[in-house]
Length: 506
Image (cartoon, rainbow, N blue to C red; front, side, top):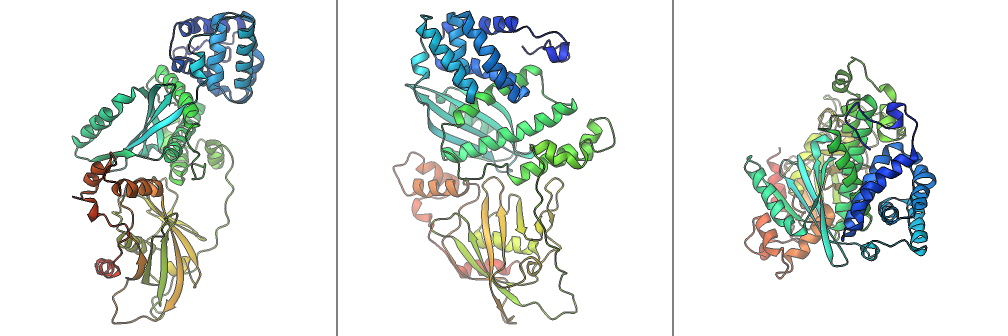
């Protein structure tokens, strides 16, 4: 059903009239293998093949399944048709799934034999464990989840390219027994390039969120590139295989707990996609020197026209001839942390956001190895890097975006782990010539280590280190470079040592 590039035989490409009977014959020919299969996973893959082929048709494909393919299969009234109806029902959604299952039930009631795997297919699927491997440069990660059903298990893995808008690259099936050795082999390969990589179990809800964002980002890329006729897949076979596995992976992700994070794609993925497909590089690839999308690019790529939030005019910066700026007492709290994790800092009101970023990194012990952004009423500011869409943080001061007591801004570090901080101006103080600013005057608890998987991952890390019998206890100690769990003190906080470190920024 997918031919060589330029030789597609579908009615849209060839101009030929659609022949339902011929299409059904092709589907049933493939379904013959399902009659001798013993694992329902084979049926799900077969269903995913058909569903993935039709995804490009959008809503019209659901109608084609409900009103065309399902009734045609039921009319054949043979074992192959029943098996394929069950395969479609296992992967399709909504009306299509209900129609396929109902048709299969009617055939079974009429005496058509069910395949041997049908009872096992009806058993619930659960996630046994979820893993994430990421390199220290944050360029690529691998997500793996092991699933179980009726005594059988299988694993699905996905590679994610962070520098390609966080898009999914490959999806593959694995024997669960192969997962540890595969992760270790990949880690060794990364080490051979001079980098380091870590892998650890992650909460199922977090893996679902990460995987769904990667799948959605890949879909944005494919839609834009295919519309322009420049899709750069290695081959049509690779594209077909990816789409099949993506359809299966999405079904499996539905059995994982729903993530608490918002469903919309991460900011950096969206902006990178828009920049990649609207910038000069794509215009050259498309064969002309103009913007192929123009002002409608975000709407085309992200599914709907974005609603612009009102952005206030940034106040003027303090003049050099003005009196010295006062000192702001600010509280920086890590959102979602339970128990709370926060720092109280005294900083000059005219400190640049770039310097404030440095101070927060020191105060929380982050290693400044990831991207960051300040979200304010006057826009978003961070590293002035093409594709991110952030204003330069170097030229903007704290008092411009948080001018008075009670003002709040948000600071996010690491767009993968999403360490979100709320910064609140608590007081305005007179500058003390005897004090070296910035300084830390209060706080609570140690900050999580970098790259531990966000709030969810940190909570799990604390639990693992607090349980000497946990199977990952020693691995986590090694990852943190600790000799014993006694060296890990999540409740520790020392304002004086933080202030000493902050003094090096002056």
